[in-house]
Amino acid sequence: MRDLKVGAAQFEVRDANKGYNLGVIEHLARTAAARGAELVSFSECSIPGYTFLEKLGREQIEALAEPVPGGPSTQRLIAMARALGVALAAGLVEREAGGLYNTYVVVSPEGFVAKHRKIHAFVSDHLTCGDRYTVFDLLGAKFGILTCYDNNLPENVRITAMMGAEVILMPH
Image (cartoon, rainbow, N blue to C red; front, top):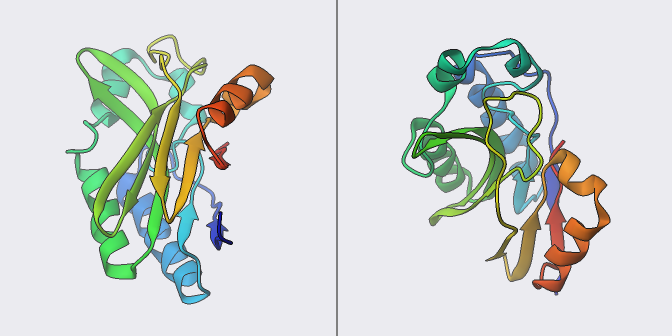
């Protein structure tokens, strides 16, 4: 595997304010790209916010949720990646087939790359747990994703590595 330059960006997310949060993501991604980052990684649920989800009912979470990759936030991330010439990774709430997932999305200038549904989702009873590990090719390397508590169980990390991941994104 070659050396990679990854930017890890953290900011104070505004709950339920996707427009603001995506604007900050764009600003920080632009800064990281100017410093040579090839991938800029943001936190779990960095697009809608996270901890406040525990206080929301299902209908309120559904209102924040989007399809992936066709939803507006993923599409905006793709547009940012194209404009900046870097890969981006950020979290949101995904809606699919009646399920709501804490999902981490990875995009590149070429488009959608991968998504990982948090295996151990617990902040809300309305979120469905993911049911698989995620490994994908990006920037000449094999990447995996494990979100927050997924990393507390060594078996998850071990399995992801055994599936070929050389780098594991671990958004918290």
